[in-house]
Image (cartoon, rainbow over all chains, first blue to last red; front, top):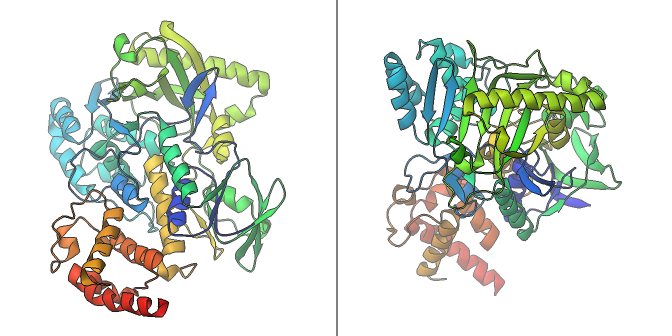
Length: 469
Length: 88
């Protein structure tokens, strides 16, 4: 099979790149290993219930009537020629960060969070405002820069270590592949995505976004091959000569974009043993997530936040825990607590905790099942300590582990956010192989789509790129 | 192609790129980016849409010619005419 551009992986970045390119007349083939598209942001049906795989929230909410500097979601709508109503995004009510000694609520826009900080940390609110100004502009997503510690910079703005941790907790949970810190450019993006712009959710869950991308991609002439795994990337003369498929057959393309992850992509190369190793290592941060189906809306049980980030004990620890599941912190997410006109079905509450991938990968099958049951119990009591009792209203429970993450994303270690050392330019040592997605760009649905668009623009559509045109 | 047709064709492209913009009162002699919320990426998309829809190439050094609707007419008019005559 021949095409202008082959894309490995039909996650958000691959689909956005594919759509952008197909709309400009490139012949594009997306190769997806799984039967379903979406990567980590997919959906599935189990025992009659429909679930999203990992959707807690779509960040970067666009408020109605917003006028101001171009923000990421507007960029996506324009670049992909999408009507803003297509994704059917509704804003959150409010979210919160709960630590032992303080609770801060926040919603879309910085007003509520600023007000809460002024009440609980009166001496810090000016520093927080200055921090907001410092973060106002988005950095260029494709420029390679050395890691800059956010914790070091925050010390100039915020004195109280509790508030530093409380500001960081949601942002690290939402997207730091680094342990205990985050690069300051990434912090700015997370700060704007989560605090300044805020959370929203598609009415029908992530499937709505995927349906739009996939149907537009096909209407534009793109081909999406499911259950089609790439077995090897054949390299000749510093170029990808062809992609060899597991099922037999080859795909040849002028340009190859891979969303499979940096190390994961490199491992597919036929010359993998001759490629000098780079500084990149697999990520260490992985999660377990518990999903409860409830018999009534969470609001009726007294639980109103869209998303709650909690931490118990002193100090927020963002690293691979020693134990298989770390119940000292977590994210509690409730899709029913968005401003939807029709409540999503089924009623779901989900909780995410840090997990030790080594432990999960070491369990044999009976031990793995036992660990899941144990983790579920641990999660339930940790979450109920925050939300109040709800498990007597649980009709159904499901759980995913680092192993599940690896299965859906191919990321080593179940590292949702990939390697800590991002390849911002998307370039590799091969002239026609570029990275998009988690290991190039920024995380989350919006970050992934922007990554696909940016890489498609830079290396295929841009006149300077020299390819195609 | 008349000047009005060229103007309309540019406005059609802008409408597809930025459907939320009000294009009912775009002044032909004022820079588009001063009247509309268009950034450099949108501008590149105008050039790419010209190539895709009308097979018209605008080299980077000529982008400035497209800053206003009047500029578009002056710059693109002859190019459309050339395409028209070669097609005929």
